[in-house]
Image 1 (tube, rainbow, N blue to C red):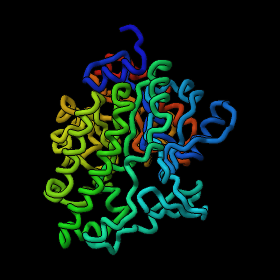
Image 2 (image 1 turned 90 degrees about the vertical axis):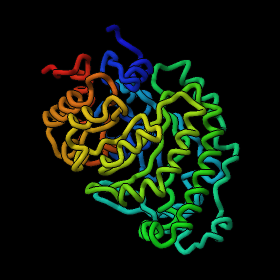
Image 3 (image 1 turned 45 degrees about the vertical axis):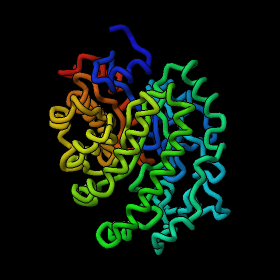
Length: 390
């Protein structure tokens, strides 16, 4: 097969067809990028000049990959995200150790050996009753600043680059945003003790997200190939709640939102959930999810990627699968290469796979391993991949 453009390659793969090679993503979205310190080390390793790192997600501290890095690595996807609006995700706090996001959630800086990250410090609706929901200072979905300059940006990228474009209309789709607003433990208890409040909160979030998404997709819907949604439904060890609770409380709102998206764009629906979501894959397919990310291979049901492909591969695509807990940070370059070869062999046949790390690459990952990951994906990702060549 002749060499394809990145856009053609991704479209074929997500239509479960074999392109010229497996697509590669580093930086296409807020869960497939590199944390700032790691990105700056990578630039230095690649011999590229230092500069001010742009941020794709403040909460995740995910870097927006610059064009010179994207070209060096040969990646296939770049992001086209909603703008922040007047109350941007970067928030309004003058305290450099905290910020308040556009939903009113206060985040605080937490140090680690490699830098820092952000975690929720004050969930603003922790003590709220149903009648208090209308009093909350919700983000304005009609804020024109959310799409300011977006039409020019997406049209330019579509006409002047060959990248596949991943749209990002919302930061979090439903569940995660709800527990950031309510508090994680409180919301879990609410599922049993205060179900009416849960439904009222989910209804409010869904309505706001639909209005924002409508404005966004009216501008970018014809140009993008992938539209991103995200909600962490599980931990490393299993679901955060029973499948029955998911189907009762969360699935109906997600189904409504994804149907709304599909009425407005032909882009594939990409759904990110950390953790062991294996028991919910059929549910996600049922509500219109086309792509599952990040395929957290360190979990019980997602580690056997050959079985995943056999059981679900004709109905959903997989995006991720390259281990960030052990292999990328602690493995040798040769072990990274073996990881790439295994996941491509398992998930690549017939299309339906994009090589990417399991969530954002952290600062403890050596730049050499990032480069080996990409080099191996280029080398071993050429079709046919039924038996990966040495």
